[in-house]
Image (tube, rainbow, N blue to C red; front, top):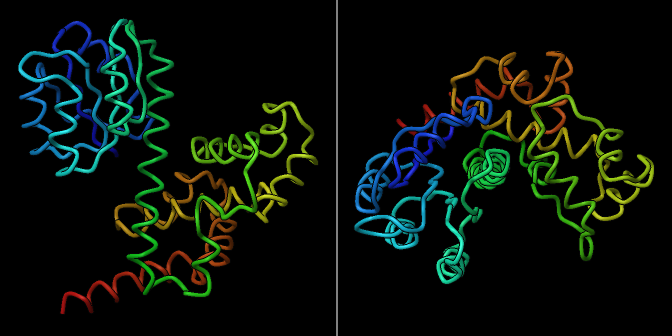
Length: 269
């Protein structure tokens, strides 16, 4: 679960944001809230959230200043909400690299879309870290096949970017090449050909690659059983999950867990 902190001085808006979102469905949990920038800074430092949702104008310290003061200490994605007529704050937020800038009144659909985008960034960051961390466990000859985003040839067209984002945001669900091509308004054959041209892989290969990266993260934490990791990464069939996992990692999920325990134990000794 990714930890979320909500900083907003207006109680009604703050509570509304907290209670209007299905956090569990997004894989998140609200760990704290703040009514001003100074309180936000303290809670960011103590709670170390993964995502911070903040208003621009708050007492004691505004949202951008709160982010500026803490982003070097705690690594998190930020979403800023603001009223109209605050363009200077918006430009400041862009310079700070915020994930999304939303205008009040905040539409829950847009907030959930912004959260999904932030979660995608967190997933990618964690996966790169995990691949580096588990290089001793994963078959080294397989690491190149787990790189995400996939290396591309030339400038990537918008439909390819949208497909990759779709995989990142919906990999837990039952998705298909046909569903993706329908959303883009092109044929499944054309989409697959474009994917192969720019990434070297088909839709199914890309989907499995991303799902296995997520499974590596789940299994490495030691908090889920193999069948749970399979279900939480979009695999409906346990045996198929094990087959695909071994193809990309070089070991079955059970072997991976054993190697993980062995390597971690050796590092601690």
